[in-house]
Amino acid sequence: MAKQPGQKLKLLYLIQIFEECTDENHGITMPEIRTKLQQMMRLDKEPDRKSVYDDIDQLQDFGYDIIQEQTKTETYYKLASRDFEVSELKMIVDAIASSKFLSESKSRELIRKLEKQCSNADKSSLNRQIVMANRVKSMNTKVHYNVDALHRAIAENKQVKFKYFDFDLKKQRQYYKKGADYVVSPWQMLYSDDNYYLVAVDDGKIKHFRVDKMDGVDVLEADRVGEEIFSKVDMQDYQRYTFNMYGGKVEHVTLQFTNHMMGAAIDRFGRDILVQKADDKHFRITVPVAVSNQFFGWVLGLKNQVRIIGPDSVVEQWKALLDDVRGRYE
Image (cartoon, rainbow, N blue to C red):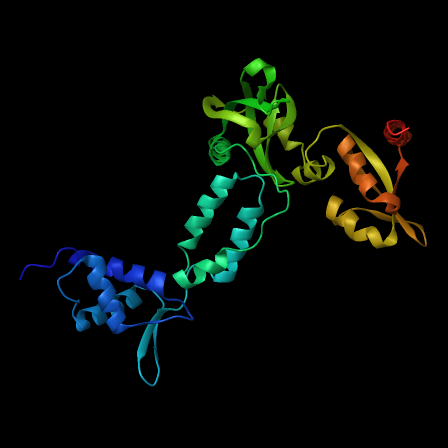
């Protein structure tokens, strides 16, 4: 007897039914399964009950965690476990939605894809109220392609070229080097302050570039250079002392904190900092810092809980900055 149209797809449709209509808290009856299969496969009549039982057995043998629960009146079938638990999906969705690295359209697209990893009943729980007030999202809709190309270049030991831009007063892209390409040797990707950065060797120096401000990233045939230069850089230290990846001359700066600010010091500089007691209420650390306005802004944010002790040159820069800011309001 000729098979019904689409009969070979019955197992796939059955998997879809279990993934969309069931989870550990929601089951489906055999009559409901047969009705859905008939509709999805456009059959003249419902599939034979025994054939559906056999299909479920095959899925279980393959590794699908399909279980059945018996109530007083009915038997329910459900897909009890999946690759991702709903709580895990919620965390991933939160990270995607709140990331300013991703454009809003890309965030929505990724979340829609994640919704396919849970049942229809759980999809609404992924629509979480995590709108970040005044959250700035990336305007570069192709940034994920940049990340992929850069990782590929690093894996294949190749140089890359790209154009690098910022925004002018009209919010239009303003390209550096008058639009000429940068050609660099990529060595490391960093994620800092919700942004991806490429750490590369350019003209014999270590430099970093924000990935969402790159345009036209292209992997070249030329092999990377600068391995000896890059090998001398400790990436963990590099990320700590650059303060949101803004450059500046690296100095060994001594900072004095009130004792209850140890957590803030560890968060910023790591657990390996050498701590010295200043007095009963204060401690000091000496750490490498790229001295920049961003570093001084961080110090200002901590108010009277931190003080720059040395070197004298950095203290004088700090005083000059404070005098300049005060002068603007006099």
